[in-house]
Image (cartoon, rainbow over all chains, first blue to last red; front, side, top):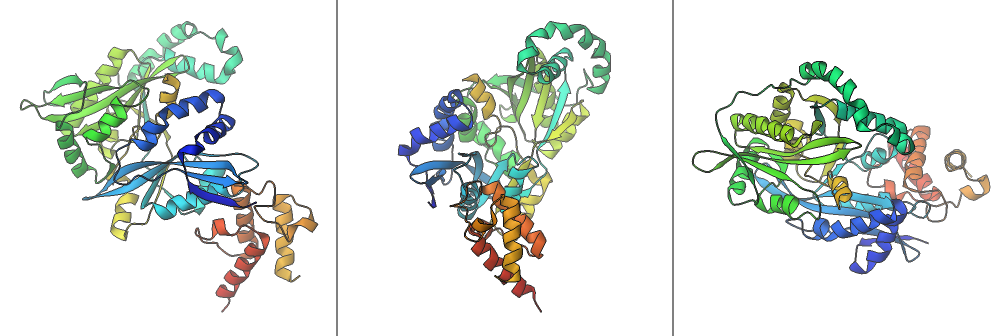
Length: 367
Length: 81
């Protein structure tokens, strides 16, 4: 009974989704089926790496998804993949997860992975040569304290007792905490900037390619954020609603853009700053001001950002965003030493919730 | 059975919770519970016990007690002056 590692074939679909069903639930399996083609077959890529499956005794026992991306490293654009949907049929999988990840590391120039939380899973990636790069800082700013209080209570109470703690129950405590939150999260603070025109955008035109070129000069390591990517990620996703804000100059060029979305965190409304792209620091500051104003207009209880550029995180902290936790991010590359130095330097990176399958759980919820 | 194999067998039996009689022929394919995580636990215990370090490339290949024993012997010989 040996294990064979091979590329996924369309004829594997039924068995694979049965595996999803076992690993998660029947409902989740159907949701994954809906996003499969969009994620693995239509993402803009230089070279598309097929997903891998492990077969044992003529049955699929494990799977690893390879979301193909174009990674900018300095002046070069290299093929890379994000590992996603790593799962195994417990009790039958043997060493297949190790073998699947190893094959992926052998075949792809740069392998990226969100996750690898402390513990056994992270040990697998580390022992196969992946390294953590500290670029996944999550920042949080509370806007309406009743929301996070209710979310915290729901998490602690568990599914059965949640109904005894409706959100309105936390309104008074939230009001009491508001003055302290106003100081801690710097409500009303604005970064000084020049004047720009801010407007929502329905589609990504050629000006976004220019913005990506400018952004790439500031952050030499980032997955492509050109028009093709943005359109695929934020306009063609099978679920999820995204608000795109663009900051334009008098000549019509785009100085900065951000992508905003909203998710439920128990009974609270969480605003997620998915992207923040910019040509210079002044435009970045103006974009942050505009994004916070948009989130407040949406009525979210808190705003969260994950990753982004180092400069964006500095400015977000200046307007009251506080470190919440670190999103684990790991990589392994087989590129040369000069490239490796760039990849390992957190200050070179731009990464966001729009990368990998970081935000897909939310999409799944929304389908 | 040499001293290395004896120590290795004892370690495998303890980490994978196997009867002593089944250890020598044990492999990932034939042993229930020898999955990726158990494999890492086992190799880390072997590294600690024998003072060796397996490379990332060989980790998935060491899928039987016999192969692990051969690798330990090779690494110890490489270390010897």
